[in-house]
Image (cartoon, rainbow, N blue to C red):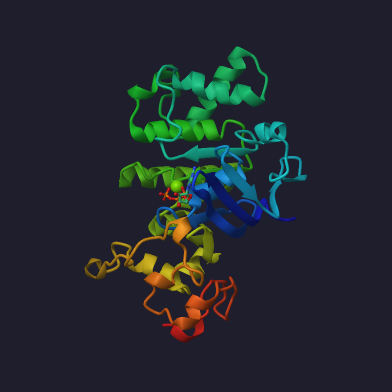
Length: 327
Ligand SMILES: Nc1ncnc2c1ncn2[C@@H]1O[C@H](COP(=O)(O)OP(=O)(O)OP(=O)(O)O)[C@@H](O)[C@H]1O
Ligand SMILES: [Mg+2]
């Protein structure tokens, strides 16, 4: 495997009192060394469940099935995370795979200094003296662009701005120099200026550390800023995927086109959202998942779920009508 990782036919369901909720069906993509792969889609499309399934961090009622969740380890060997032991997972999480989530999910501990929290992340996987640990934490604070690390190391999270706190979260994620960073909406809670700073920071860190990034976002503007390739998700499946330059300039699926049309700034007057909403997992139609919201839907779309294939457009999409409806 020359990739850093590959998700192969991942399907995740949640077992509830009222039955199984199929959150994901047959999600596949790969992540190449040193690239940023964005996973984009509206709320409820399955982005977070994809990231959390790959890390096996879902609640106990989740059933994860996959042909494989391959990950290339630091020593070059390949492990299937779908079949790894919990002990192996603990060694990989936060060490070989770093994670950052939107702030509410994994906020910092308010009663510990940021230095202690970063130090804890470092010490979890590496043994070192107190002095060496402090030096390493100062290095990490510098790496993520915190000015005057000596003054900041002993501060508490509430003494810092939202943007600073997100930098601290990033330093924790990078504490063990992972070869893959999973970032789930890491900038969504931040204002636009700070968001741009954090995206620049991630790009710089990626170049310095040579890691791959799996970047989850609902925002195509962010995708065009940061990603090399993009996976467009809808209703727990992949509807389109390819290089960012291709997908954003020559989108194939009406859903991707709809997402692009609803971006602000494209001559703001014609801003329009896609009509309707993402169907709940229990209410998915039998044919194309997007058909109920699609202006191009015909009977053929309702018969069977379209395959994810390249119909001559240069990258794959799940739309049987794409050659006919090309702009
Ligand atoms: N623990 C759970 N139990 C039952 N259903 C769940 C659970 N977690 C997620 N789901 C369902 O799985 C689907 C995908 O959710 P997910 O959180 O991955 O969406 P998302 O794309 O990350 O959305 P957002 O942009 O809002 O974060 C949703 O329909 C959601 O309701
Ligand atoms: Mg999410």
